[in-house]
Image 1: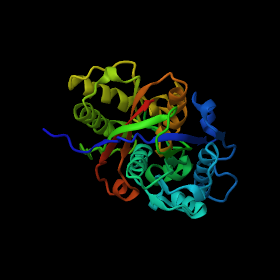
Image 2: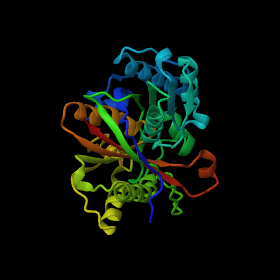
Image 3: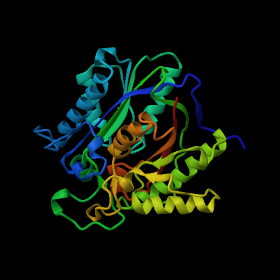
Length: 333
């Protein structure tokens, strides 16, 4: 059977630089030392959560560009997304930067879907620099999908904490010494009928397993080919389910398998099953993973960002949660 949704990048676009920022609570993350900036105020001293979210996006883009001595006017495409209704923070960031813009929504999988589209534009010779990434802001997102924050409601152990963080990558044509984007797999939407927005890791796990199996089969790779295989934000509960699904499919898991959501806040039990949000995988992929590739610790990695494609309306109407996972393969040349 032919596997659909496969991407191969012969020209090997690179991630020339990254920018990662986090909110005040994200200081608790063991990855915080690798972030470029930690905010003291979640709203950046602005009037609303959404305005703070937009400013965080804008400043993270500027951080990534400053590392390669470029300005927004040098960028061919801005490819970012978030979880707020109609991607309001991304839209205002685009308005400020005045860069040709496509807003992207793959929920928490946007970190990888944006990277793949940036690579496609670069591969086609249509872009010399594309900005890709995603972000989330805790208060702005939580009030859309879950209890009003002011209630202080008890959450189950399956729930995850939406991070305040943004991760941005600058994608340019190939040159040596940088992580190169060599292949990818576009995910299929998997919906097994789960409706609980406080157990999204379990809802997303089948999509992650499906994409990994298709990537292995379609690109002819296996677990031993990679230094790390990192999912996005399944959290501890979803990550366990994902590994069991892989074992049932005959894919042996190992310590190479990691999950950004399960690891984001370490072993801090205050965060229940771990982290989530469009900024979760983006922050770790573009700080910890990127840095380890630049230092030579990782030579070949596979990143599978996962997304729950629900909306406030669908959640309020009791609909199930369709889920997606996109994969991108990076090598250090």
